[in-house]
Image (tube, rainbow, N blue to C red; front, top):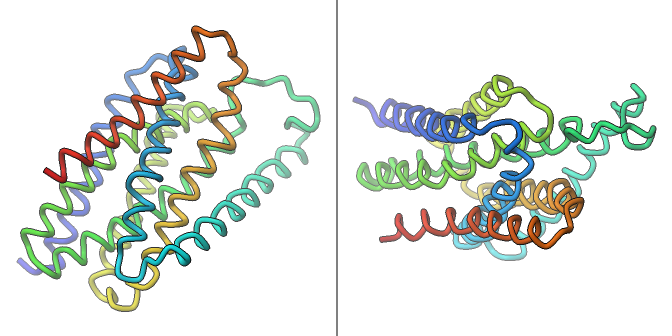
Length: 257
């Protein structure tokens, strides 16, 4: 079997496995749980971006702090602009906050759009990383694929919850996450044929992925938690955020050992 075929099989299997495991956990949640579980999603996003994605970007061959920081800053501005485009579209239809909408059940897809774009970047980079690992050594490729699957599960759970919070149906959330998984295959194929050319872009792409996670968590999701300011709710939110961060950290620790 050719190296490319092995890369494609590992990439497709990894994407489907992480997506299915996350879907089983996320889609079993009742709709009334979503506002509460968003706190967990915030923690998973913060943990993935600050504990995994950014350190990985800086540690790469071309991943100096200045390059990654510029990509992070540019990504935040990019997602701010994309969010404005979504708001302008809804304002044109007179269904937005600026026109006094009282629909507080979801955010008209804003955070869902941000996380979908960011997840596409992230999955694309995952594909490049998997291809690069297999090109170096088969065992390294297998270990890297397993590591990416493990890291993806808590992130995919968070993505599902964010899409549900944004007003998407469960089937729509599943299809969107499935489509973003295609980016992993694209990254793997491009990584196989042009890894030397794309290697220099990988830290910047990781910076953009981290920017999407941070922007969604800090701009779109955390402000919603302040609507419940009572002590019990605040403690519950802190615990769930901590669980989200802890799940990412735990997976990273297990993989390292």
